[in-house]
Structure formats: C-alpha cells, structure tokens
Length: 138
Ligand SMILES: [Fe+2]
Image (tube, rainbow, N blue to C red; front, top):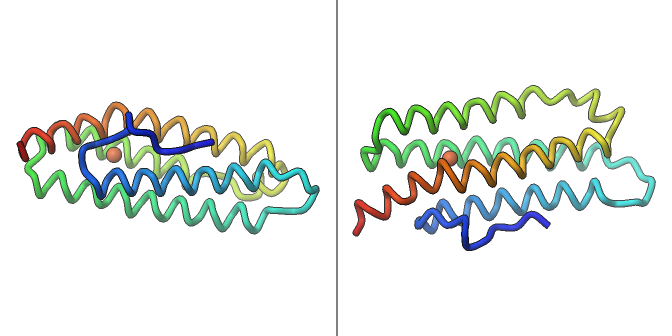
C-alpha cells in the first residue's frame, strides 16, 4: 500500500533507497495492523515501530551529513533539520500503553501519520535538497 514511487526521486540513489526502505517498514506495520486473526500483535507492532524509529533517525542523519558535505544553504539546512527533529519528537512521544490498549486504532493513526508525513516531506523538503544536489553535480 505504501510504496516508493518514481515521483519521490531525490536524484540520489542512496537517499532514494533509504526512502524506499522507510516505505517498506511502514507497509510492514500496516500489514500487521490489518490482520484480522484476533491475535495480539502488540510485540510485533512495537518491534517494527522501534525499527522504523531507529531507521528514521539513521536516515535523517545521513541526509544531514550530506548538507554539510555539499555546502547546502544554511537556512534551508536548518529548516530541514527542524522538520526532522519535530518528526523524531512526535514519534518518540507515542504512548505504548495507549497502543497496547487500542492496538488497531492507535497503530493505524500512527501509520497514517508517518506515511503522510514521509510523503509530504520527501515531495517538498527532500526534493528541494535533491534538486540542489542535482544542480551542483551537473
Ligand atoms: Fe529529509
């Protein structure tokens, strides 16, 4: 359901691959939430959610290190990092107890938030950086 598409390209193979991995993890989470087997999937949900959070931190760090490496405009880099940080904060504030009590509802809310945020962030903020990278390499 959540999949990387060509329109998401940031003209950088590594960034595109990392974005694709993010979508994979979001889909994995969505698949588990969508199971209608009446089993308790709390442990799996928490495990994938943890994996997703960790991977996001790694991925943001990767992008931010490229801002430095390629002398990205300081103001743009600052705004971009603010977006990353507010996302990390939001994800870290997820209440696991609430998630356990309302697995489907709460997980779905989280998945949809992450998917929407990632899509918007890629299409706007990351792409802007991607265009910059493309420009300096041309
Ligand atoms: Fe980004």
